[in-house]
Each structure stands twice: as structure tokens, then as C-alpha cells.
Length: 79
Image 1: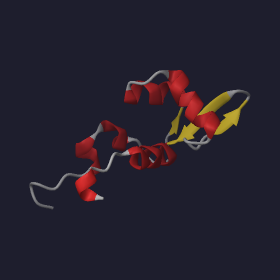
Image 2: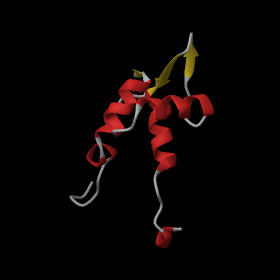
Image 3: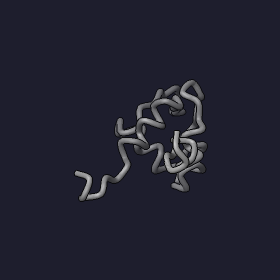
């Protein structure tokens, strides 16, 4: 890899999460500086794949990273 190529780890700490890691909405809210209710809403709406146990959501690390990749804005010149 050349000096100019970035890995996912160089881009943001979000990508340091392991695929098997179990996250709660509070963890994700802290990582991306959003309100925890926004994260819960994404879970309820199915935008962020999650598991619901007694009104408690858990999110698998791989699903969260894929959610973030899908949310990435693509500049118009790259479309």
C-alpha cells in the first residue's frame, strides 16, 4: 500500500469496531455524536439492522459498519 492510500481504520474510529462486536444504541450514539433516540428510531424503522429483546436493541458491529457505508455521501462528480 502506498503512502497516499487510506485504510478504513485511517478514515474513522468507527471502522475499528470488530464485525462480531455487540453494540447498544447508546454506544452508537456516542460514536457518531447523535442522540440515542435517533439510533433507536433507525432500529425501529429497519434502517439499522438490529435485534430487539424486551424493548432493548442490540446491533452487530458488521451491520453498523455496513449502515455507515450505505449512508456515505457520494459527491456528484463521482456518480
